[in-house]
Amino acid sequence: MCAIVLINFHDVGQIPTLAPLNEWRLRRKDLDMASPSSVITLGTAGGPMQNPQRAQPAHVLMNGENPILIDCGEGAMGQLKRAGIEFRDVHHIFLTHHHFDHIGSLYACLGLNMMTQRRSPLTIYGPPGTKSIVDGLCAACDVPNAIGFGVPGQQLPHPRDFVAVTEISPGDEINIGDLKMTCCENTHYRSEDEFGQEGYLSLSLRFDLPDRSVVFTGDTGPCKAVEVLAKDADLIVGEMMDLDITMGRVRALNPQMPEERLSMIKDHLSKHHINAEDLAQLAKAAGASEVVAVHFPPGIATPDKASGYVERVGAIFSGKFSIGQDLAEY
Image (cartoon, rainbow, N blue to C red; front, top):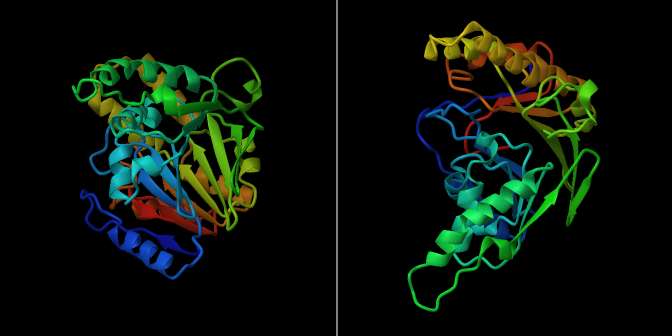
């Protein structure tokens, strides 16, 4: 069995806030105490289907008092506010891959910073293709930038003036102060025997901080490279799929879908995502200390099903395991 299991499903369907957490941070500042790292799971749903209880994929890695946004799914700007973090205080965004559920709020991020007169740099890191996406979103800001607030002579900063893009590939290292990011390709787009070939990349990210190491799997199928990346990690924030439940919902919502199309969806879900056993095996193989499961499509990790996932993971992984909740801190 897992050593410690944290599941908190009180007020399911309501959106919590982290006001007590923010008050604790202020008290800690007053006491001049050092600020450890933490992870806030802003959005724990898996897209593209929306989940009324969970926001789309996005997380915050707090390096002391410095927030780093990991993925930017729909609603991420609002979730930052609910977590007590001002979007203008985010200076670094890392993207694991370019599926829309992980980047849907990038336009909002650029536009809101523009409309609130941002001047400080904002760097967006992501796999090849990130620059093309950001360039397109910057172009989409041309019209609202020209409109401004309708005040003659007024000029808003354009996202092109404050946004920089750094494209990252497997083996790259990014250093931000005392934080080090490394990454690897995973199997969300293709199998490991196809790594190194031409094509877009889906990445898993590792952050080594002064007090611990954190790995974000992003979306991935079973992958030895991710196991290596996550070696001895203190925390893995990893996706968890349930193929049977998801395919059941797909069939129920699309009764006229041809079997050929259903077979394609099942093939993608089974090869390019991981289930509870896969996540547990990843954590065990890596020697990780703690796992937080995220990226749940509708119907997965609900209160009535949570204990089943805990048992499945606990049968393989003996460390600390949590079923992630929006706006929880780890």
